[in-house]
Amino acid sequence: MIEAALQGLAGVLQPEALTFMCLGVLIGSLVGFLPGIGGPSTLAIMLPFVMTMKDPLLVIALLVGMDAVGNTASAFTSILISVPGSSGSQATILDGYPMAKRGEAARALSASFVASLLGGLFGALVLFASLPVLRPIVLAFSSPEFFILTLWGVSMVGILSGNAPIKGLLAGIVGVLIATVGLDAKSGIERYAFDVSYLWEGIDLVLVALGLFGIPEVIDLASRKTSISKAEEFGSGYVEGIKDVFRHWWLLIRTSIVGAWVGFLPGLGSSVAEWFA
Image (tube, rainbow, N blue to C red; front, side, top):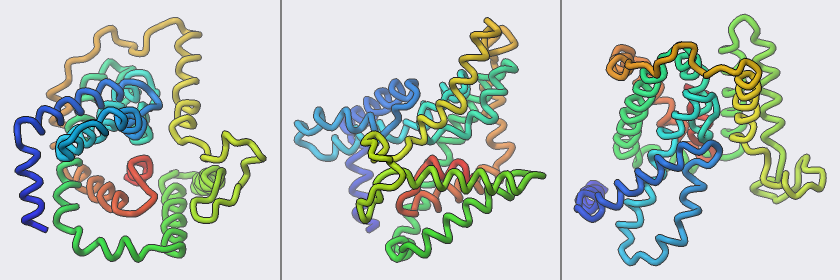
């Protein structure tokens, strides 16, 4: 495995592969500005174009570059206008947007980018080191394990609800019920779709987040007829945002571990990992 990893690293570090990776990062960043699209949609759009490329290594470099930067770039809209650019930047709204309203958007963006960079590097190292050990564990996951994991997630929502654990648990249960809408992945049975073909794929989490966070802010801004930030300047706290990440290094390590673990589990992803963290 180590020999194969070194061969892959050597292939990616070739000038042509690096060029395609940078191109993918640029495309992913531009698409990340658009709320509701995200990495998977970008990959689907680009697949017809990369099918004509002969070198698979260049295709991998391009696609990975686009997908890896998706959640990082979507922090722009989450912090600046309280609209999640993708499912992996919803929790960023909770702290990033209030900072933007105080004129600290630059500090929030800087902290988000640096934390995303370090978390991504940490996840890659953990994946490389633990793949031989965790691979059989992940493949052994079945319905009972996923059920316990779901109960754990719902109970965490209640615990993190402060003085209203019952309300938190009820909100988690409602979320689980909403997630059951659509066709069952294993049996193909229609659940709570009411013969509406649009609901067969379930309720998109990004659309729910857009409705919860984006629409109220648009209405509020239209009624106040003012800008988002109460301060006129965009902010100049780029260096302070970087310091914030290293100042809370233990928090960064803990949340990186949470993200790596949730990422290993089938069926979960960044939209779940960020709320766990």
